[in-house]
Image (cartoon, rainbow, N blue to C red; front, side, top):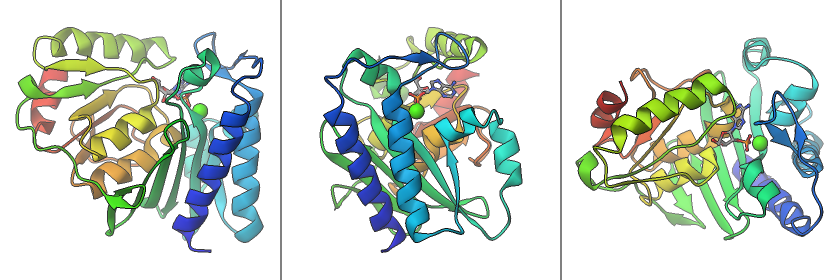
Amino acid sequence: MEFIALAQSLARSAGALILSRMGEQVTAEEKSSAFDVVTQVDKDCEQLIREGILSQHLDHEILGEEDTFLAQKSLEEVLSAVKKDTYLWIVDPIDGTSNFVQGIAGFTVSIALAYNGELLLGVVYDPSCDEMFSAVKGEGAFLNGKPIHVSNKTGLHTSVIATGFPSQMDARLAVYNGLGKLIHECRTIRSLGSAARHLAYVGAGRLDGFWENGLKTWDVAAGVLIVQEAGGQVSDTNGNSYSLNTLHIVSTNGLVHESLLDCLK
Ligand code: 2AM
Ligand code: CA
């Protein structure tokens, strides 16, 4: 199976599993703090995706949110241990676990594939809407198979910008400070609970920009390629190019990128 077909098929299977368990009494376990939660469904979805990848590609590596947490490893440790010339799958089984726990639609499954630090493909699947966002390096970005493109807004005053509230308090405060400045500058602000979905929406032109501090590679890798392939721009909050280590992310249609960076400084 082609890599992109495998990613889409596993994202769909995980999405179906999440929806099938939505009415259940789910227990939100605390991870690093009360603001950082996981459920058995996150773990089951990650295992489904992991087994699906390894059943076809035993020599590939997987960076999964829940497995990394269980292994008590930092993201930096795992990324620096990835061997050269090895395919690395980057998996967030549920991005927006708080949405899932609260019974709010809009969580996503996020799967990316990288090789020597470069993103090759990304899929972000929203099972509640059956929306499959996807991108392959150099081949464009798509929503349910149709090409998507970022918006053409040229100023922040007409832009709708999204952000999120990460679990770490320093990152949360950075978002809060950014919001204090941005509310004077942009048309309005949205917070939909999934970084991956925010990025996919920037790619689809539904949002003109998205920024958030304190994210992890699995939250954003797939969405980053979708934005880039849809004609948009992604950097860190200082304007440096995106890499798999970027945690503080700014993504836009490209036309409002400098204005958003300036505003958040
Ligand atoms: P999650 O649901 O997969 O944890 C919300 O602001 C965004 O932050 C979501 O994409 C959420 O992803 C992410 N997030 C929550 N806790 C996080 C953590 N400890 N580290 C990095 N990202 C986190
Ligand atoms: Ca997650």
